[in-house]
Amino acid sequence: MVAGVLLLAPATALPGSVKGKVTGAQRLLNPVWSEAKDASANRFTWREPSPTVKAEFRTLFAHAPKEVCIAAIGANNAPPSTGAIAFKITGGRTSPVTLVVPPGASIEFQNRDPFPHKPYLVGQGSFQAAEMKSGAVRQWKAPAPGKYELRDELAPSVRSWIVVDPKVAGIAYPGRDGSFTFGNLPEGEYTLRAYFNGEPSGKPLQVNVRATGNLDLREALVIADEPKEKGK
Image (tube, rainbow, N blue to C red; front, top):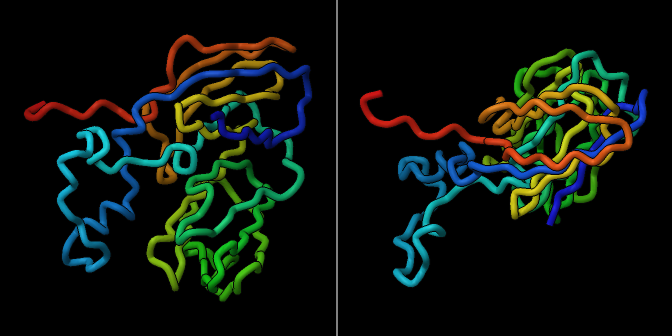
């Protein structure tokens, strides 16, 4: 499974595609789950896993298809994007969890749950807490570059981030197998950068997109740094 790709700006040159894989998702953990593990938070009951469950499945880690946004950052500011980008609230979370867009991008928050939500952007008067009934939508236009955090007064598990970068030309989300595809990037030099919890994560990867060419990356995009050894 390969997750969808979003071209944020109209192409000004012949496009090309980029295909690759990510590695390191098992080292990422959303802060919502980190907070929930704290017994004093009274948020979740953690039980010992069954001994029949493989060790690799006993540790929580990020769900990359929603939580890891891969941005293609160009050398110049991207033209304004067209159309609204859906940001769905469903299952007590959002889809996606991290989104990277250029300034002026239109974002449509959609409540897909059968109960109300009351989302707001932390410290942003342009998107204050307001009840959204099931099926309701709210519009917001991305302002100046920066990081914006979405919370919900009715659901503490809703915690998401929108990163605004003027040079982002497109974004993609990895599939369950780590594969991702940029299908329509204009020709040029790009830095592929993973974002997690609204912050750059892992190591960037430089790519050269050629017109009408198909670029299959041999090197994986590392989306989480190796853990530091004790004493170093």
